[in-house]
Image 1: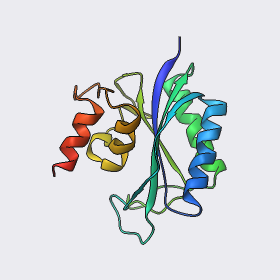
Image 2: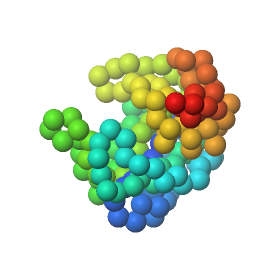
Image 3: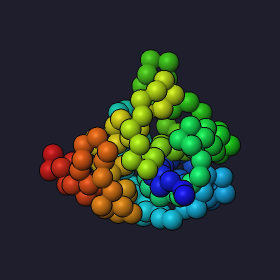
Image 4: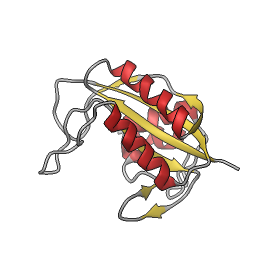
Length: 158
């Protein structure tokens, strides 16, 4: 039986919506069945300054792949769509054509050199939680024990 995976997507260069749509199509071809796609959200950059706004979305995918296989495939898709490194040498973020984050893999808690699940910053980012709460309002963060809706409400109260 497959596993439910949630991915966050973002783009702040080029034709943002078109790039995200291409990424979602490739995810559907290579990762598994895309069972939900959020609306596209226009957001400001997080963690750095840029004149380019982001387009963000979330998808739910049913997959037979392992978490590491999912990560490897989305990183290949990022490179195919023209994305370079997401950070400068000093660790600060940079503009990007596409960023695909593995947010959750069927509730798995994992902390390895290669992958941390659930995504370690997702619960601090409205641009992640808003599209996730749209497609999976009752999804429960495996560490915090809160639903996507509850996490989003807490972010909006700030």
